Image 1 (cartoon, helix red, strand yellow):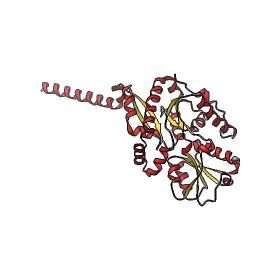
Image 2: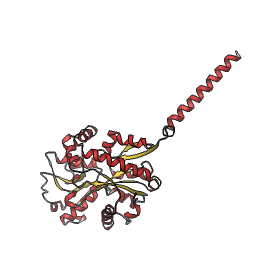
Image 3: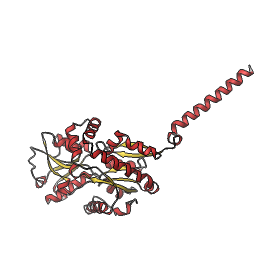
Image 4: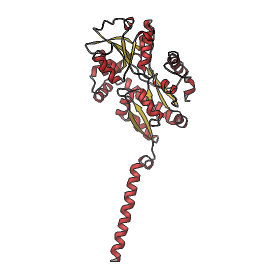
Length: 322
């Protein structure tokens, strides 16, 4: 009897330790595999949506000891809110969101830059709207999303038209709500970006009034990181740029495959995705002074127009990697 109790007790102890080990392994997966988790935000339809789907970038980073996790956001402003709370390590965004975030007190650092997306940013109107020139926007309602590239797009559009910010009615909506308002005629114009812009552009009812190339709203993309993270993880940032640029090169040479990937993910017609992909060149680079100079112009404009209560000196928040 004592012998049976002894074995029963030993078995119980083994089960307890097995349960403890299992629980520990589930909550410490990265530690047990010696991989450090790196969280990257992305927006639907972006290059990072393709990179996530392909999986090659994550495999390359894994070889270097890092496990990549992705988090999806509908726009750059929302992504930077997550970055401010430490929920994202790297945020690929347009040129405007980081400026607004810095002005609000977010401690972030520019670690990389992409190419401009000037042709992918547009102001759309209905073909029967009677709006045939930029000056026709006077007195009209324009939908945009505060803190995103669409806001700067409206500024530059008005500047090119010779109109003031008070000559139009600004309607701040997230892009999904803006799409609905535009389709129902509740706004007269819509400042947006691809693939939403391409989808609307190809519809029978819309036309492009202007784009970022014409207005000089170039919308260069950047990758920003929490300042403390960027400071302590320069090696990861360098790898991100190295393998990220390889992915961008692949995208530039495989438009058909990229179109198929994004069309399946987004359930958007291939014609719209094809237009989105083919009218831009993808890239990822270390930060340069010339990128900072142009980003500063946006910050200055927002401060002059009282959009920002604090003037932002972009150069203070840039990491120049060797």
